[in-house]
Amino acid sequence: MKPLSNTVEQFTESIFSTMTKMAMENKAINLSQGFPDFDGPRWVIDLATKALNEAKNQYAPSMGILPLRQAIAHNYQRFYNMKVDAASEVVVTNGATEAIFCACLALLNPGDEVVVLEPFYDSYLASIQLAGAKVVPVTLKAPDFHFDIEELKAAVSSKTKLLIVNNPHNPTGKVFTADEIAFIGDLARKHDFYLLSDEVYEFLTYDVAHKPTATYGDLKDRTITISSTGKTFGLTGWKIGWAIGPANLIKAIHNVHQFSTFCVAQPLQWAMSEALIKMDDYLVEFKADYLRKKNILVKGLKECGFNTIEPKGTYFVMAMLPAGENDVDYCKKLIIEKKVATIPTSAFYIKSDEGTRMIRFCFAKQDETLINALKNLH
Ligand code: PMP
Ligand code: GLN
Image (cartoon, rainbow, N blue to C red; front, side, top):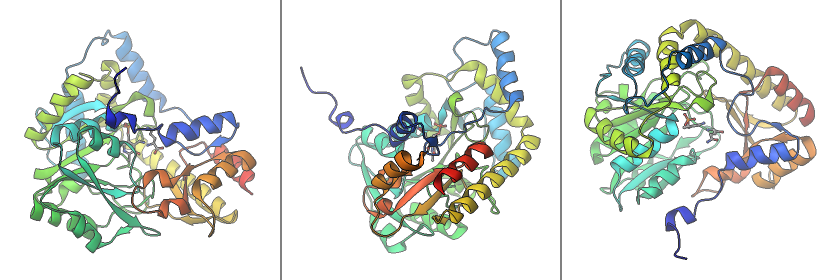
């Protein structure tokens, strides 16, 4: 038989699937893959039930139902003072993952280069490679995960088509400073490349406000902003995401979306179109809950002797391992001996070996789950 796609043949199982599987096999508490072990808000689920019962069960418009696009645009306006045209500047996708995939396929040609800040969310690499483009990694340096200005400048050239920034940042919990985003923006203008800003943790920041990359000066003209409702509503299985950007880029992204999945589950879109405009009270509770969970886990891990790095955003916390330890072996040991599953972060690096010195814990879990995990780790 003839060989399969050379690109796809190189792909391996996502580290998130591997670690969740290992957690189940070993009956370990799963603080690895990022998803809540509690259900999303009942009022949002009720909205979906209502939509299911109202016969909203056929294909949705490929761009996303207009009320959802309007709700998304409305939220960018009220939260960030960012003007978004619901008709032409928003496309609804199957989670942020599909938005990233479509954006890469829409923008990239073979030979183009994409600067990716490592550690990175794993789907970036696969999406870039499937588009035939080249990944150019720049390492964020622990413990504050800053980029080295010279390293970033050296990574950029006339071949650079796109730079991907994830803010707030998975897995490090970093929130980029205004100076850092402004510096990236200056490079983008100077070398005329696009920015893909993955902001799925936009509502999960602690003591700092989230500021979309597209709100920095004129960066809106070259930025694709990606987000989703998975984290914000604790409904990762619904896979409602979107890309926002200039109309010509959104048109191209939609062209890929219409031929990859065509549209997103219609009843869930109706539920989200209502939930997004009614989310203010929920957000207060959501933020308070995650702040409490972060404090339980960070404080508890410190008491267990872990060298944690305080996250400014996301629902993850990184811990530096003692000298001589390796992340993969350490994670295996934690699962088998302590019955707690985490993520070895070397999976998120291709240039530096810094990831071998760190592991990631997820605190999108019931307080009780976190407390039980901490008991195991003592
Ligand atoms: N980007 C980042 C940084 C993520 O952590 C995740 C998922 N956890 C995604 C994108 C994918 O989001 P979605 O589930 O909406 O596809
Ligand atoms: N983004 C989630 C995490 O970081 C996992 C998403 C997935 O499993 N694809 O754990």
